[in-house]
Image 1 (cartoon, rainbow, N blue to C red):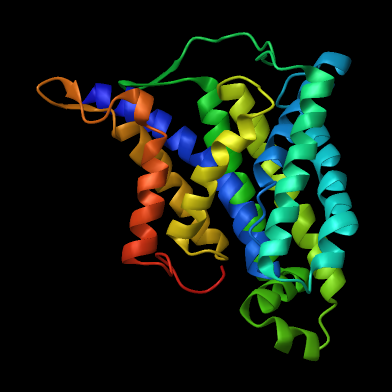
Image 2: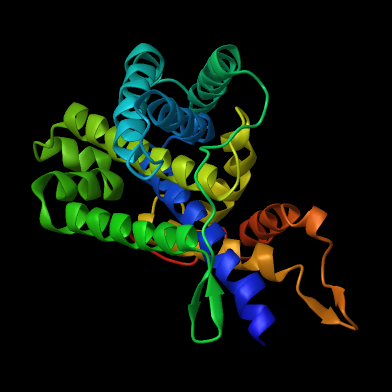
Length: 294
């Protein structure tokens, strides 16, 4: 039982927290702009490498580099919208989707050009795991989970307690009615990109701290992010967050040795769980688990 908690549930929660951060930003963009943003994963990688530049250049810890990652990623997201997406907003959805593929390739190519293809890390010193009773947890995992909870709380306060957040909810519920009632659409779109970029940059740093950095790291998480967003109900941030946690747990638990000591699924195929969840959700409950933005 302790092995289940220490080696499967805790890593599943950490992976789920990273998925939740990424999927929430993805769901926000879709909810407000009805836009499946395929460059989202590469913005995650950009944020992770922006933190690496701060860690290397300023000699700070990756945790302290998170604001630098967010501050660097937000202008990239806003520039992509201003240069590409804004002028295509009234086009067919497929046109926007293809343009986001092109944006993703440009971001990824720039990371390969500047940082190279070799996997790297932040160089943080490893610390002994904490013992909470009989549960073992790495300190970095505790910070990742705590950081995700704080980000979720901040997002909840933004969406529920501020005028800008209520405008975002109005745009997600009924864009035409929101325009008629005087919502500043351009301002809401900029805020949505800003919040989404901050969330995905934090997710990128968390992923880099937990594993390593490669220019393709965000693209590798993109399928899981979409699966989590669709599982929770596309366009529903809280649903996407819960979908991310459930998906992370499902991936880790899929390799638990339940039958005669053999894993249910080989660890090499864990990433296939996201694809299976995506397909089953689209077949059995295409509207997702939850209704309404919140």
